[in-house]
View 1 (cartoon, rainbow, N blue to C red):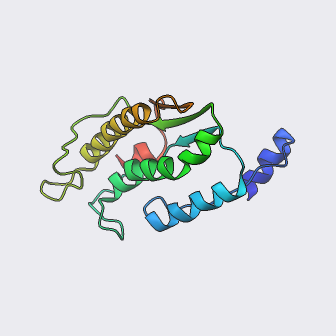
View 2: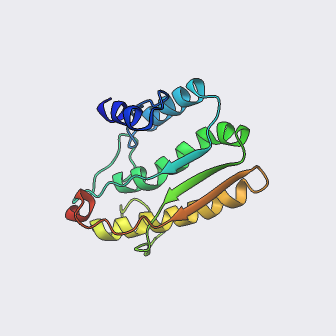
Length: 165
């Protein structure tokens, strides 16, 4: 709420709202997207920018490896649920934050259940999955007036994400 108040003051825009979502939890994502769809008549830009880098393998309540759930599944769930609003607001855009540090995705073991969990390797794999997800969504919505792109955010040194790696 303090950030929203600061943004309202800095921009003079009274239409700044705070919404909370737990990206590890599909039910929370569904509730969040429902609130967004009901509250707002249009959506021009969806920025999917999330990561979790647990040092030890953990799972969401649904049984998905946490890093994959937050960094990939949440992007897909948010995009899928908000696509009707994005499409109705066309031209609009989905921007998925990936990384040039992507690689090593093993599609036969997305949750690191058969191989040793290594945080950095899981991060790289999740970012490769984000790239692939972005390409898939871009192809799927072609002609809908919704652009789907993926980009590298730049260096994150000095942040909690970098420190946890």
